[in-house]
Image (tube, rainbow, N blue to C red; front, side, top):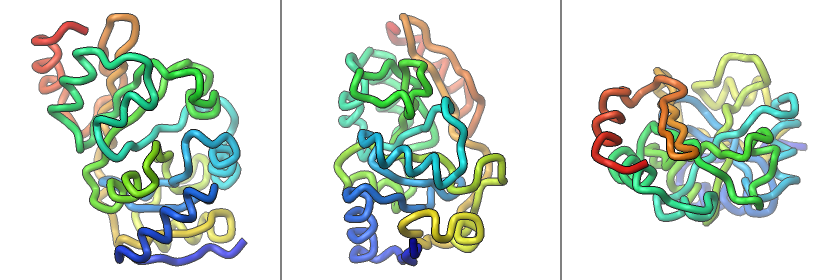
Length: 210
């Protein structure tokens, strides 16, 4: 496979979306590092992501959606807590772990029955998710157990020939990952500290019924 090199023009991003909709895997920049994008609801596309990374089975894969209103594509019920956190922190570095509908592959959930999802504040990641009109995988664009890539060059060094295309958006910012908050069985809890401070999340949740 020859990995196609793309820029960030509207034409190139439409090309990247076309590749993803056809089942391909595309590397793209996010707020922190480069991610690997594929159709999250396609088992074959998700398998291609895991194969490219050399990722073992059973590890959940986080997703990006184009807008908060798309959350109901992935979960059976939008609770007040989910809605409040989405309204206050999306687009942004907050990943919500929510119960997944049965159509979400175990390759995405890692067999947990839940799925991690956010709306990206990065213009390229956000636009790509909107262009494909569905959930987009957002696992880091690097070989398993390697350091995440902050440039398209590093992505190419590790994954050239293993993925369909790379969208070169320049060097990404790095820094702390998204904060991960799980909302399950009437309980909301922070399971990974990150870019959104826990005290800000707790402040929103105190005023909501989870």
